[in-house]
Image: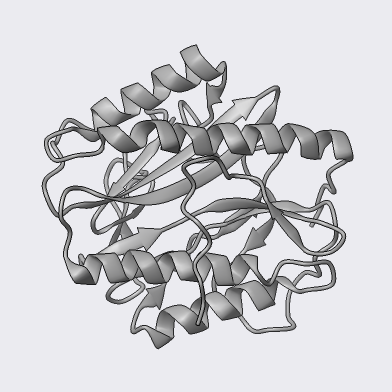
Length: 265
């Protein structure tokens, strides 16, 4: 496993890319309401990235081995879609929950983040799922420091999700990121403490738990990208890009509109 430790110059570029990715989510927030289509949201995000920020939308035409090129600039995953939902012309309706996943490229470096959004008034059980998933991500982030193990991150995420009655998607995970969209290491959202790769200062990776209200099992739709819960239960996801510092961590994907870190009792 070849992991690139980032130089101070790399880290400064990653801070900029991360903040810009987060600012796309700030920008799109007021447009998310009943009646808008995810295709319209994608176009707004695309135009903002390209024309205002001078960034490149990393997902557009992204084609890892064996995949058709991804056709849009952001991923929009609605309700029972776990990840990689392709924006389309179906209007969002009151009560939908939506994840928007943004990755920008600025000066050759990637910034990757996602948030959950509520369309109009959503049910208490949908809000609870999104809240617990957000807590899962932050519990994982709080484990990041030199000398910790990747298994420590996965363990706290899995424990918190399952204690709330939810399940953790195991087929998709966080990942190293930098000049490449996806690098080593893979960051699982389940696991055992004290196992896995040891963290070192200069590593940068995403933590992006996908938590299902029902069972963890999934299926891939015919478009080759959209992943849904097999039992059609709701799914939620949040994502930050995190730097391992000499003393702990720094979240690189923050901006004025980023939701605050949850307070754990």
